[in-house]
Length: 447
Image: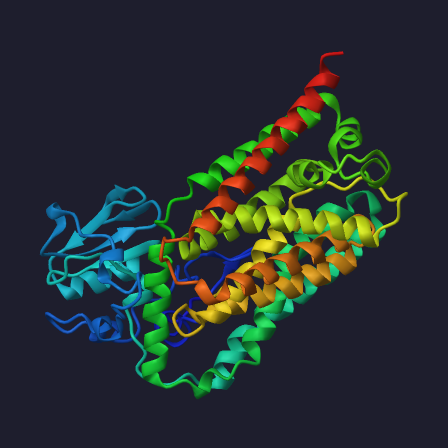
């Protein structure tokens, strides 16, 4: 069944899909029936409607975050493709431009080409993302908005129930079932319920347009932020896991994981760091690696690299200490970066609250959603999840957010000397932890 292009682009831009812990994806605006509605009325000749909503005081509040139109495509109508397409007998590849001469031909192009990432107009030198093609003309009707959410909520409920049932009847598949249920059931379910009870009908047309523009510009700005520290971090975690597989996951856990008796009785306190650099398998690393990257990208963009290192290490340590305090001496070895990742979530929760008037509203909402989902996930998987470490890491992140709260500035890039020293110290300790794990496991492999 086809969907009305006007509903997708104009009435419900707040139906955002966000993967895992906050990675930003554009709303689902594919394969719509774009033949209905005068959506190009938002673009009178020589006008750019969203300029009235650009906030120059924000680092992302500038049209410069939109990609420029290539010189060879200036002065024409057209679209940039989000996938392969066939138009007028010619095959086009992803990211290519398809250009036409008139507005009528552009409308025909939008009808026939399903996968589009942006639109170009003769009088504007930037590629207009789909989220900025159509502006709100009227307030959102609450009943219609909730009706659009109902099928998604129902689907999420079924997936969640199915995942829980699978985990119950197939204990050997419990981790896979719960992870799949979390990604495709719990996350969209909590998100849908939060949206369902939000009074979007109270938002004025001006506020709807302001939020839509702020969201799109922020998203465009965020995906261009440097991520090298995160790529290196994920690569290190992968190398550590490969070494674990080489010597055996069980043996590697004995040597460097958070073995409570070894820490308390043998004084091996270095395990409170090394345990956060190891994982229990590929699926465990995949889930944590995605979360590490996604959360880290937002934190790096908003507060810089220095604070990220401090938050991650402090949360790993506090998570390990919480695990030592609340779990018995005979408990199984603990591994995983989850304490540090939950700390990043708690830190981001504080940041998004402080700057709630500047940041797109979805960021704080998604932090709340992720916190709720992780709490539910922890309860469902209590048999193999160290909830004490999760809670300790999360609390540590919130605490650091409150400590840094007075001095935080959005995307400032400047940090005080004490924070810089703490950052280098944190990075050094994490590096030493990697070396320690490598040495312990390599020593085993050599015999």
